Length: 279
Ligand SMILES: [Zn+2]
Image (tube, rainbow, N blue to C red; front, side, top):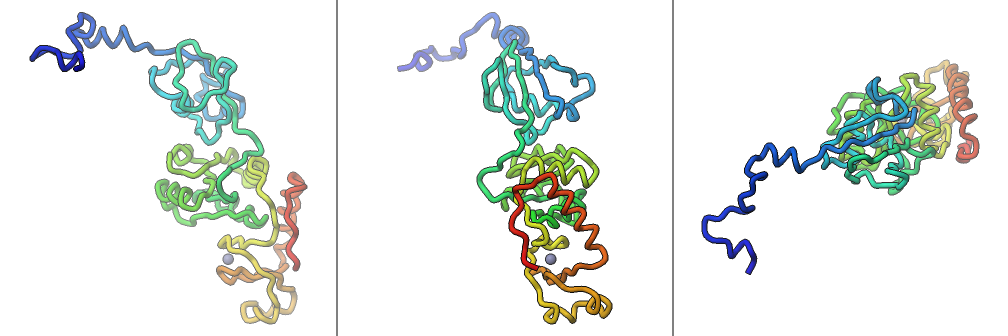
């Protein structure tokens, strides 16, 4: 028989206690609010309030939240966070900080491995140019033309195991996303360089439809001649057709510009390029 079961009828549990009887004092006396020191790498300062961008910043926690939650509440999406080291020892994001701890936050490692599924991306509605450039390089980059909303995007990321790329921290904080990456620049050239540098996706230029992300197949000019304007038919050689939307690709006037985008991208990532398609 337990102590509680033996208690006389009408007894309270816990027993009357002079501290417990005054909830305010009980709370103040028993629940400490730990003060911790948090050191963020310069790469992540962009997420912090201006007064927290120094070498180290002191944070008062509520004593029960995880370190992951504390870091996130400072404005840093966990998708951007790598190792968490407390007093020289690596801890999981679930670690609950204690008073006096010294926390060193590391940015996510580059190149970043995303285990569990082939590397594929899902871009939010603001990243159309980046999506087309990734596709040009053969990277699987799904993109919604319309703003379908954060819950739907996050659900698609989970269902298709796609890494969400976004400049929206709120979207990256959603628990259901498969994986995510913050896009640091608003310039498409820098965005592309950043994503290639971070995730090092295998590249296979000219193998994917920039319009719909479908795979391209080599096309015979005669087979697609009805889809071409007369001028195009007379001047250019067709080289590919999208298996998904039927769009035909040829080396037209804008080809040189696209070649330049591809060449620029490949300069930074030599070694991970797949076999070029036969054209
Ligand atoms: Zn297509």
